[in-house]
Image 1 (cartoon, rainbow, N blue to C red):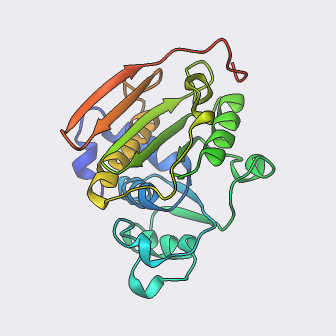
Image 2: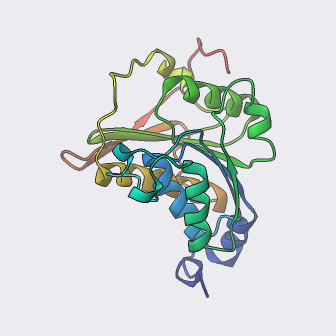
Length: 233
């Protein structure tokens, strides 16, 4: 049986696997984080995955975005990712959307979705996703990585969001530093948090930010609080 090694886990079992197969997940961004997240969710048996990405494959992607090959350069990331994942698990329904998510199309692109995974590398899109998911009370798993450092957090309506920590004021410095091994560590935790939420496990990251330092291999769970100044709460 395809999923037997995870269904024998007490925290998943047949009931949890059924929840995975019934889940509808949107992954925004099919870059460094997105490649790892998409792969893990598909292999775990998430029943429906919507991939939202408007970029094409470039040479600089290939040090960490393992879904793509040299022959894929200039091709649509969404199309390549759908083909890649389909070959790895034909049981998963894949919906590729070649668009950039914005405030204007968020409602259309995220309709009928149970949980959203943010794998983008820009503040503007993150805030659009954050605001939509908080307003609609849709579980959102956020992650970011720069060089050897990254974070993962889970967000819902009654828990701290990106605006609560002032993330909209973040200033990114040019091109993000990225090495595949560090991206994979952060993205694997992000994917695992999605699976835990779907299955209904305890000890989730709501109300916390998990800080990952791959330089000294330290991980710290930092408690967050709702901000009185956050206009989403």
